[in-house]
Length: 250
Ligand SMILES: Nc1ncnc2c1ncn2[C@@H]1O[C@H](COP(=O)(O)OP(=O)(O)O)[C@@H](O)[C@H]1O
Ligand SMILES: [Mg+2]
Image 1: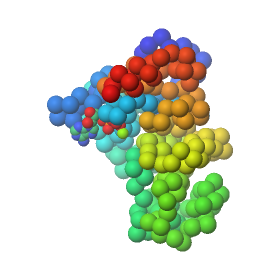
Image 2: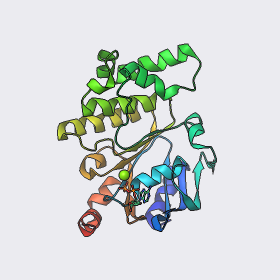
Image 3: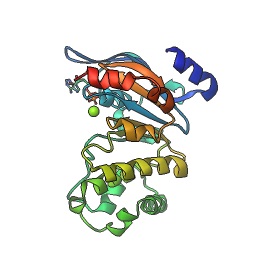
């Protein structure tokens, strides 16, 4: 833990989700090397860094999808020991990179996939209404196949499907990847709206640094499997850390 994190810890209270000294190895490749980071209840936190820095691996380590060789993940200040398929019931929803929607299913069916474990039909209907209210386009197209949607709409669908789990924490991996600039802005606005309206805690992995810094409370910068900086968006804009990391890695 560096000085900035200690300061934040003093004002901000305990972490809702916390990675402590996590190391991940894919065979001979050490993808994360002693990564400590976290998000407090109600925060929107970004994990940024160049390609290959280990951003996706951070989220996969939480979800039990990465070979963690050292360190621990804490959820509500307890060791997170749930199996991958049980984590959603703990209150964590994961929207992976590449918006993997089910193209042969309708929009409504895709959304229902987000809470398969839920048997309460009334609750399912209530969540569907609430997600469609947040994303009017999903309501409008609810009977269309997901394959008929644009990339931006599919990203909204992937976000909506995550929210169907009614999560306390949403983990988003590169939600703006490959989208046109105007759609990127729209996606970031939706992420901010989810935080404000639903009070969902959010950890978002992003390559698109400029856009994401506008909507987050804090950000971590990852380079070559290690956290090289963390702080408020302003503290990050005030340093040349982004230039160093993003240009230095080329
Ligand atoms: N399944 C895998 N097998 C081997 N190496 C991997 C695997 N997944 C990721 N890596 C490597 O781990 C490092 C971090 O990858 P990743 O977390 O996907 O980075 P990012 O999301 O920041 O682009 C990279 O060097 C990548 O090549
Ligand atoms: Mg990635």
